[in-house]
Image (cartoon, rainbow, N blue to C red; front, side):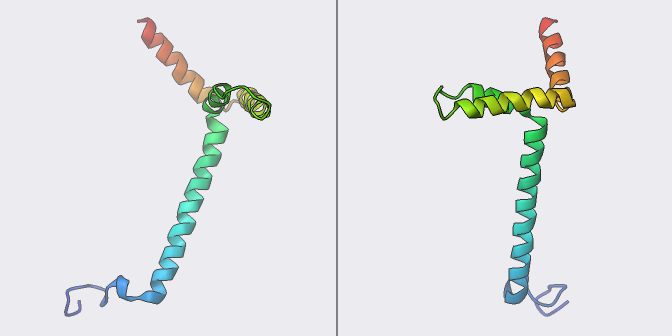
Length: 98
């Protein structure tokens, strides 16, 4: 320990060269996490994507978005990617009936 009681000798705030590397690592980690979670949501949450697209106000610009979202939802169902959401929805329906 140093005189200030820090086990590593100096405060990391005082180390300008290392602060930039740490910041870059943090940004890379954050963007990686955002990218991975976005891909996971697109793959496994096509229900929400299709519902969102279906609620958009009708227009010529929205029509391709709705078509693409509905097509992806159907394709995800054929690939078995909707299994978890469908199972939870079935459980919720069964609980509501009781």
